[in-house]
Image 1: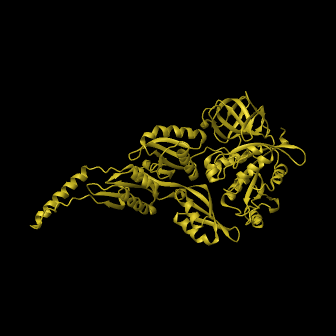
Image 2: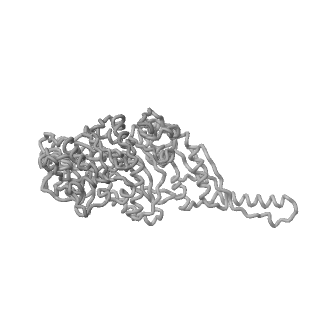
Image 3: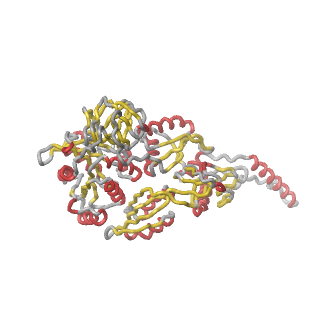
Length: 596
């Protein structure tokens, strides 16, 4: 189709603002999907996506729409994930578009991720069409949503389209707005093919299927193309589009979105954001490419050590569908053989663990998550440490830098004091606050990533009774007084419980772990000491008392020295036993502590 009749757009919104429901309505209205094939959340294929109401993978769809002016347009919708962990995926998807539908829930108004996603879209210079959704709800406040559009996002309220995706209200108006307001794609003027690979997935029969948007030239089967960032040259086997299932086409022209397959066996060979061009007459690289680097690391071990090989195979299969997930083998004295895994963020970590449990039936345990610390040594060299086991000796370290995040927290007015207390407890600082409306404020703060790993989001939800929302973006690194906390059982260090914490929090964390270990380690014939240590300094200690036999029971009266002699003899035996004894910590104890 000629470029003047093509429109490329994506939908951006906060979680649960009705993005996927609207996609379903657009597909139904344009006749892309017959009524009998319709189902709820059609573009969310994974059980996890449907259950949690979130989009994890981007899904492109090509629709044909006959506008009111009588002409037929090709509309390419790229459904993007909304969560910050996948923000690079979102930015690549947005760079394949000329416009975006911004959805705001009429009952909830602007939320944290709405703000973050609008900033992403504005950076890409996209035409933004605001859609106020769920106007049929009894508690919908359209006037307030319009006011927030102007006050917070600086978008004129009169440009907003009112709709209800569930009731099918305003769908026609949205499609017309897409045709009228979003500019058609323009060729870049390069000498040959120039296309952006914005996503990929693995197909058992076809190999890697790469999602592309053509910016210049045309892409067709039999063509030799080069992937500029990975430096690979391949022959295109098949090109096509999605509706939403893949169908083949003769070729993809300027402005069109679709897919191509070639003899690519592993998703690692196709980097997200890569430029695809003619191998004989290459074009320039498209801007904005970044290597994806994991931000959060955790060890994943099978609960039954016999499942190690099966877990290895499962992780390999999972990586085929998720190229951002990385893993390497590691072993622990306590937990046996397992893997050190890298994730984009907390939601990504949760989803990978959940998929391993559900889709592959694996019984797994994860160690305490950690982030990458930049450790500068006394001789000026720099090491990146993501595992406490590899932390160098403190006497050789000049400084340690930890990654920071910029967090946007939206909460009701009455919770502002609690929020500020929570942020300062997590070693953060509030930069500034903005009043969003009569009921809510937005706090912009800077915190260490390490501090928001475990319970930060849950505590925001419980403090604000579910009304708070949060979004974050990475914001460089900062020098901090970080230390390695070791847990010793009978002076033997247990590497599964080691962690890197801030010096001010080390004692509290050590005490908590020591108390928990005291509960779960079974009593022995001798006294067992549990200690938390920073280097050579003990900061917390607990003692598990020994089983004792009453050796003086047979003494009826008589001299006290006889009793003392028996007790001293027992004491010597316990001492000898302690020096040669070994504390066996059961697997259940590790699981109980790591789960807490």
